[in-house]
Length: 362
Image (tube, rainbow, N blue to C red):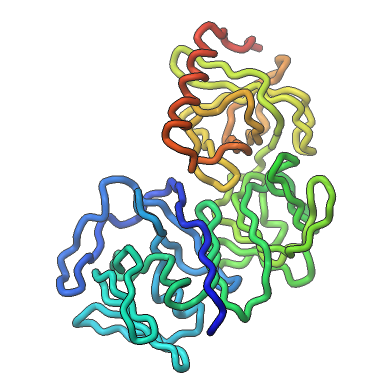
Protein backbone atom coordinates (compact mmCIF):
# COMPACT_ATOMS: atom_id res chain seq x y z
CA UNK A 1 0.00 0.00 0.00
CA UNK A 2 1.80 3.12 -1.22
CA UNK A 3 -0.60 5.86 -0.27
CA UNK A 4 1.03 8.45 1.93
CA UNK A 5 -0.19 8.20 5.46
CA UNK A 6 -2.31 10.81 7.10
CA UNK A 7 -2.42 11.20 10.86
CA UNK A 8 -5.33 12.92 12.60
CA UNK A 9 -5.15 14.96 15.76
CA UNK A 10 -4.07 12.67 18.56
CA UNK A 11 -4.60 14.64 21.75
CA UNK A 12 -7.95 13.56 23.24
CA UNK A 13 -9.55 14.77 26.45
CA UNK A 14 -11.65 11.83 27.67
CA UNK A 15 -13.52 10.86 30.79
CA UNK A 16 -14.41 7.16 31.08
CA UNK A 17 -12.31 4.97 33.38
CA UNK A 18 -10.20 2.11 32.01
CA UNK A 19 -11.69 -1.17 33.13
CA UNK A 20 -8.37 -2.64 34.29
CA UNK A 21 -5.71 -1.03 36.42
CA UNK A 22 -2.84 -3.24 35.27
CA UNK A 23 -0.82 -3.91 32.15
CA UNK A 24 2.07 -6.15 31.20
CA UNK A 25 4.70 -3.51 30.55
CA UNK A 26 7.61 -5.84 29.95
CA UNK A 27 7.63 -8.45 27.22
CA UNK A 28 9.84 -10.79 29.28
CA UNK A 29 7.81 -10.96 32.49
CA UNK A 30 4.32 -11.90 33.56
CA UNK A 31 4.27 -9.43 36.44
CA UNK A 32 1.54 -6.79 36.00
CA UNK A 33 2.38 -3.13 36.51
CA UNK A 34 -0.14 -0.47 37.52
CA UNK A 35 -1.32 1.64 34.57
CA UNK A 36 -2.03 4.79 36.55
CA UNK A 37 -3.91 5.92 39.58
CA UNK A 38 -5.58 8.49 37.36
CA UNK A 39 -8.56 7.32 35.26
CA UNK A 40 -7.81 6.45 31.65
CA UNK A 41 -10.18 7.48 28.89
CA UNK A 42 -12.19 5.04 26.79
CA UNK A 43 -11.94 5.46 23.00
CA UNK A 44 -14.40 4.06 20.45
CA UNK A 45 -12.79 2.83 17.22
CA UNK A 46 -14.13 2.34 13.70
CA UNK A 47 -12.06 0.54 11.05
CA UNK A 48 -13.20 0.78 7.43
CA UNK A 49 -16.73 1.56 8.58
CA UNK A 50 -16.99 -1.20 11.20
CA UNK A 51 -16.77 -0.77 14.97
CA UNK A 52 -14.09 -2.81 16.76
CA UNK A 53 -13.25 -3.26 20.44
CA UNK A 54 -12.67 -0.03 22.35
CA UNK A 55 -9.26 1.42 23.14
CA UNK A 56 -8.11 3.84 25.82
CA UNK A 57 -5.86 6.82 26.39
CA UNK A 58 -3.75 7.42 29.47
CA UNK A 59 -3.42 10.89 31.01
CA UNK A 60 -0.72 12.97 29.29
CA UNK A 61 -0.29 10.34 26.54
CA UNK A 62 0.03 11.66 22.99
CA UNK A 63 -1.85 8.79 21.35
CA UNK A 64 -4.70 6.50 22.43
CA UNK A 65 -3.99 2.76 22.62
CA UNK A 66 -5.90 0.46 20.26
CA UNK A 67 -6.43 -3.34 20.43
CA UNK A 68 -4.10 -5.26 18.12
CA UNK A 69 -6.21 -8.36 17.45
CA UNK A 70 -9.41 -6.43 16.69
CA UNK A 71 -7.47 -4.09 14.40
CA UNK A 72 -5.83 -6.99 12.57
CA UNK A 73 -9.13 -8.80 12.07
CA UNK A 74 -10.81 -5.65 10.74
CA UNK A 75 -7.97 -5.19 8.23
CA UNK A 76 -7.98 -8.84 7.16
CA UNK A 77 -4.53 -9.51 8.62
CA UNK A 78 -3.43 -12.86 10.07
CA UNK A 79 -2.19 -12.63 13.66
CA UNK A 80 0.30 -15.09 15.14
CA UNK A 81 0.98 -14.84 18.88
CA UNK A 82 4.47 -15.75 20.10
CA UNK A 83 3.84 -16.58 23.74
CA UNK A 84 7.43 -16.65 25.02
CA UNK A 85 8.23 -13.10 23.90
CA UNK A 86 4.65 -11.79 24.07
CA UNK A 87 4.94 -10.68 20.47
CA UNK A 88 2.14 -10.36 17.91
CA UNK A 89 3.14 -10.99 14.30
CA UNK A 90 0.80 -9.55 11.66
CA UNK A 91 0.79 -10.81 8.08
CA UNK A 92 -1.19 -9.91 4.96
CA UNK A 93 0.22 -10.81 1.56
CA UNK A 94 3.81 -9.59 1.50
CA UNK A 95 3.24 -7.27 4.48
CA UNK A 96 4.71 -8.45 7.80
CA UNK A 97 5.34 -6.72 11.11
CA UNK A 98 6.05 -7.75 14.69
CA UNK A 99 4.80 -6.09 17.89
CA UNK A 100 6.85 -7.01 21.00
CA UNK A 101 5.06 -6.12 24.23
CA UNK A 102 6.85 -3.54 26.38
CA UNK A 103 9.26 -2.35 23.67
CA UNK A 104 8.91 0.88 21.72
CA UNK A 105 10.28 -0.96 18.71
CA UNK A 106 8.13 -1.54 15.63
CA UNK A 107 9.11 -3.27 12.41
CA UNK A 108 8.58 -1.21 9.24
CA UNK A 109 10.01 -2.70 6.04
CA UNK A 110 12.33 -4.89 8.15
CA UNK A 111 13.65 -1.81 9.96
CA UNK A 112 12.85 -0.76 13.54
CA UNK A 113 11.14 2.55 14.32
CA UNK A 114 9.98 4.12 17.58
CA UNK A 115 6.45 5.49 17.96
CA UNK A 116 6.79 7.09 21.38
CA UNK A 117 4.75 4.49 23.27
CA UNK A 118 5.39 0.78 23.85
CA UNK A 119 2.74 -1.92 23.35
CA UNK A 120 0.99 -3.06 26.54
CA UNK A 121 -1.23 -5.96 27.56
CA UNK A 122 -4.41 -5.20 29.50
CA UNK A 123 -6.51 -8.13 30.74
CA UNK A 124 -5.08 -10.44 28.09
CA UNK A 125 -5.40 -8.00 25.18
CA UNK A 126 -2.39 -6.37 23.51
CA UNK A 127 -2.66 -2.66 22.65
CA UNK A 128 -0.51 -0.41 20.45
CA UNK A 129 -0.51 3.39 20.08
CA UNK A 130 -2.80 4.77 17.39
CA UNK A 131 0.08 5.99 15.23
CA UNK A 132 0.98 2.31 14.65
CA UNK A 133 -1.98 2.24 12.23
CA UNK A 134 -0.70 5.23 10.27
CA UNK A 135 3.08 4.87 10.42
CA UNK A 136 3.41 1.09 10.26
CA UNK A 137 0.27 -0.05 8.42
CA UNK A 138 -0.02 3.17 6.35
CA UNK A 139 -3.71 3.60 7.11
CA UNK A 140 -5.55 6.92 7.30
CA UNK A 141 -6.32 7.97 10.88
CA UNK A 142 -8.78 10.57 12.13
CA UNK A 143 -9.66 11.42 15.73
CA UNK A 144 -12.78 13.27 16.80
CA UNK A 145 -13.34 13.63 20.51
CA UNK A 146 -13.44 10.16 22.05
CA UNK A 147 -13.74 8.46 18.66
CA UNK A 148 -11.12 7.16 16.23
CA UNK A 149 -11.70 6.37 12.56
CA UNK A 150 -9.18 4.23 10.66
CA UNK A 151 -9.48 3.69 6.91
CA UNK A 152 -7.37 2.19 4.15
CA UNK A 153 -6.96 3.62 0.67
CA UNK A 154 -9.41 1.17 -0.89
CA UNK A 155 -12.30 2.59 1.14
CA UNK A 156 -14.60 5.27 -0.27
CA UNK A 157 -13.95 8.62 1.35
CA UNK A 158 -16.51 10.03 3.75
CA UNK A 159 -16.78 12.73 6.37
CA UNK A 160 -17.10 11.97 10.08
CA UNK A 161 -19.16 14.06 12.49
CA UNK A 162 -19.64 13.61 16.21
CA UNK A 163 -22.54 14.91 18.24
CA UNK A 164 -25.66 14.37 20.28
CA UNK A 165 -29.06 13.47 18.80
CA UNK A 166 -31.57 16.28 19.20
CA UNK A 167 -34.24 14.90 16.86
CA UNK A 168 -34.81 11.65 15.00
CA UNK A 169 -37.58 10.12 12.90
CA UNK A 170 -37.71 7.27 10.38
CA UNK A 171 -35.86 9.18 7.66
CA UNK A 172 -33.47 11.66 9.25
CA UNK A 173 -31.44 12.40 12.35
CA UNK A 174 -30.50 15.84 13.67
CA UNK A 175 -27.34 16.16 15.71
CA UNK A 176 -26.27 19.18 17.76
CA UNK A 177 -29.61 20.97 17.34
CA UNK A 178 -29.53 24.12 15.23
CA UNK A 179 -26.36 25.56 16.77
CA UNK A 180 -22.90 26.16 15.26
CA UNK A 181 -22.10 22.44 14.88
CA UNK A 182 -25.56 21.25 13.83
CA UNK A 183 -26.12 18.75 11.02
CA UNK A 184 -29.09 16.94 9.50
CA UNK A 185 -28.30 13.36 8.48
CA UNK A 186 -30.63 11.96 5.83
CA UNK A 187 -31.00 8.18 5.80
CA UNK A 188 -30.45 6.21 2.59
CA UNK A 189 -31.41 2.62 1.77
CA UNK A 190 -28.19 1.04 3.03
CA UNK A 191 -27.49 3.28 6.05
CA UNK A 192 -26.10 1.26 8.97
CA UNK A 193 -27.05 1.88 12.61
CA UNK A 194 -24.90 0.27 15.29
CA UNK A 195 -23.95 0.34 18.94
CA UNK A 196 -20.24 0.77 19.68
CA UNK A 197 -19.94 -3.00 20.29
CA UNK A 198 -21.25 -3.75 16.78
CA UNK A 199 -24.85 -4.58 17.74
CA UNK A 200 -27.20 -3.67 14.88
CA UNK A 201 -29.89 -1.05 15.42
CA UNK A 202 -32.73 0.47 13.44
CA UNK A 203 -33.12 4.20 12.89
CA UNK A 204 -36.17 4.05 15.17
CA UNK A 205 -33.89 2.89 18.01
CA UNK A 206 -32.08 6.23 18.03
CA UNK A 207 -33.16 8.50 20.89
CA UNK A 208 -32.89 12.14 21.77
CA UNK A 209 -29.75 12.50 23.87
CA UNK A 210 -27.78 9.63 22.28
CA UNK A 211 -24.09 10.40 21.65
CA UNK A 212 -23.22 9.33 18.09
CA UNK A 213 -20.48 9.18 15.48
CA UNK A 214 -21.80 9.61 11.93
CA UNK A 215 -20.07 8.74 8.68
CA UNK A 216 -21.71 10.72 5.91
CA UNK A 217 -21.22 12.07 2.41
CA UNK A 218 -18.62 14.77 1.97
CA UNK A 219 -21.21 16.60 -0.15
CA UNK A 220 -23.56 18.69 1.98
CA UNK A 221 -26.55 20.85 1.07
CA UNK A 222 -25.98 24.54 1.79
CA UNK A 223 -28.98 24.75 4.09
CA UNK A 224 -29.19 25.81 7.73
CA UNK A 225 -28.46 23.42 9.31
CA UNK A 226 -26.46 21.71 6.54
CA UNK A 227 -27.72 18.31 5.34
CA UNK A 228 -25.90 15.22 4.15
CA UNK A 229 -26.64 11.60 3.24
CA UNK A 230 -25.50 9.34 6.07
CA UNK A 231 -23.77 5.99 5.52
CA UNK A 232 -23.40 4.87 9.10
CA UNK A 233 -24.37 6.03 12.60
CA UNK A 234 -22.65 4.49 15.62
CA UNK A 235 -24.18 5.14 19.04
CA UNK A 236 -21.25 5.51 21.43
CA UNK A 237 -23.40 6.33 24.46
CA UNK A 238 -27.13 5.68 24.86
CA UNK A 239 -29.40 8.17 26.58
CA UNK A 240 -32.29 7.25 28.83
CA UNK A 241 -35.77 6.99 27.35
CA UNK A 242 -38.13 9.90 26.69
CA UNK A 243 -35.77 12.83 27.10
CA UNK A 244 -36.83 16.30 25.98
CA UNK A 245 -34.38 18.79 24.51
CA UNK A 246 -34.17 22.57 24.50
CA UNK A 247 -31.40 24.76 23.15
CA UNK A 248 -30.30 28.33 22.94
CA UNK A 249 -28.19 30.99 24.54
CA UNK A 250 -27.81 31.38 28.29
CA UNK A 251 -29.75 34.32 29.69
CA UNK A 252 -28.60 33.87 33.27
CA UNK A 253 -26.58 31.58 35.51
CA UNK A 254 -27.52 31.15 39.17
CA UNK A 255 -25.50 29.42 41.88
CA UNK A 256 -26.98 28.24 45.19
CA UNK A 257 -25.16 28.36 48.51
CA UNK A 258 -24.45 24.65 48.03
CA UNK A 259 -22.76 25.35 44.69
CA UNK A 260 -25.49 23.90 42.45
CA UNK A 261 -25.97 25.78 39.18
CA UNK A 262 -29.10 26.68 37.22
CA UNK A 263 -29.12 27.85 33.61
CA UNK A 264 -31.78 30.08 32.08
CA UNK A 265 -31.86 28.87 28.48
CA UNK A 266 -33.46 31.29 26.02
CA UNK A 267 -34.98 30.77 22.56
CA UNK A 268 -35.47 27.02 22.74
CA UNK A 269 -36.64 26.13 19.24
CA UNK A 270 -36.50 22.33 19.11
CA UNK A 271 -39.81 20.57 18.29
CA UNK A 272 -39.60 18.52 21.48
CA UNK A 273 -39.66 21.65 23.65
CA UNK A 274 -40.88 24.91 22.09
CA UNK A 275 -40.67 27.10 25.23
CA UNK A 276 -38.89 30.39 24.63
CA UNK A 277 -37.30 30.21 28.09
CA UNK A 278 -36.65 27.36 30.50
CA UNK A 279 -34.53 26.91 33.61
CA UNK A 280 -32.55 23.69 33.95
CA UNK A 281 -30.94 22.89 37.27
CA UNK A 282 -27.56 21.13 37.25
CA UNK A 283 -26.90 18.65 40.06
CA UNK A 284 -24.27 16.02 40.80
CA UNK A 285 -26.00 13.53 38.48
CA UNK A 286 -26.15 15.89 35.48
CA UNK A 287 -23.83 14.98 32.62
CA UNK A 288 -22.13 18.11 31.25
CA UNK A 289 -20.20 17.61 28.00
CA UNK A 290 -19.32 19.29 24.71
CA UNK A 291 -20.65 18.07 21.36
CA UNK A 292 -17.81 15.53 21.14
CA UNK A 293 -18.94 13.90 24.39
CA UNK A 294 -15.97 15.21 26.36
CA UNK A 295 -16.62 16.16 29.98
CA UNK A 296 -16.99 19.88 30.72
CA UNK A 297 -16.70 21.50 34.15
CA UNK A 298 -20.10 23.14 34.89
CA UNK A 299 -18.24 26.04 36.52
CA UNK A 300 -16.67 26.88 33.15
CA UNK A 301 -20.05 27.60 31.49
CA UNK A 302 -20.60 31.30 30.77
CA UNK A 303 -23.45 33.38 29.37
CA UNK A 304 -21.59 33.45 26.04
CA UNK A 305 -22.04 29.71 25.51
CA UNK A 306 -24.67 28.06 23.32
CA UNK A 307 -26.12 24.99 25.04
CA UNK A 308 -28.44 22.08 24.40
CA UNK A 309 -30.23 20.87 27.52
CA UNK A 310 -31.98 17.55 28.08
CA UNK A 311 -34.61 16.90 30.76
CA UNK A 312 -37.24 14.26 31.52
CA UNK A 313 -40.25 16.49 30.79
CA UNK A 314 -41.14 17.13 34.42
CA UNK A 315 -41.33 20.93 34.78
CA UNK A 316 -42.81 23.35 37.29
CA UNK A 317 -45.73 25.55 36.28
CA UNK A 318 -43.76 28.69 37.02
CA UNK A 319 -42.64 31.23 34.44
CA UNK A 320 -40.12 30.30 33.28
CA UNK A 321 -40.70 26.58 33.91
CA UNK A 322 -37.98 24.82 35.92
CA UNK A 323 -36.70 21.27 35.52
CA UNK A 324 -33.74 19.07 36.39
CA UNK A 325 -31.05 18.75 33.72
CA UNK A 326 -30.22 15.17 32.76
CA UNK A 327 -27.57 16.30 30.30
CA UNK A 328 -26.13 19.64 29.19
CA UNK A 329 -24.20 19.89 25.91
CA UNK A 330 -22.07 23.01 25.58
CA UNK A 331 -21.70 23.72 21.88
CA UNK A 332 -18.79 26.16 22.11
CA UNK A 333 -16.48 24.52 24.66
CA UNK A 334 -13.19 22.92 23.56
CA UNK A 335 -11.64 21.05 26.49
CA UNK A 336 -8.27 21.10 24.74
CA UNK A 337 -7.84 24.80 25.57
CA UNK A 338 -4.78 25.77 27.54
CA UNK A 339 -4.77 25.32 31.34
CA UNK A 340 -4.46 29.08 31.73
CA UNK A 341 -7.60 29.67 29.68
CA UNK A 342 -9.60 27.01 31.50
CA UNK A 343 -8.46 28.35 34.86
CA UNK A 344 -9.60 31.88 34.07
CA UNK A 345 -13.17 31.07 33.04
CA UNK A 346 -14.42 29.68 36.38
CA UNK A 347 -13.01 32.69 38.21
CA UNK A 348 -15.06 35.08 36.08
CA UNK A 349 -18.19 32.99 36.57
CA UNK A 350 -17.65 32.93 40.33
CA UNK A 351 -17.34 36.73 40.51
CA UNK A 352 -20.52 37.26 38.51
CA UNK A 353 -22.68 35.06 40.74
CA UNK A 354 -21.85 36.29 44.22
CA UNK A 355 -25.03 38.36 44.68
CA UNK A 356 -27.41 36.44 42.41
CA UNK A 357 -30.55 35.18 44.12
CA UNK A 358 -32.29 31.87 43.34
CA UNK A 359 -34.75 31.66 40.48
CA UNK A 360 -38.38 32.29 41.48
CA UNK A 361 -40.07 29.24 42.95
CA UNK A 362 -43.33 27.86 41.64
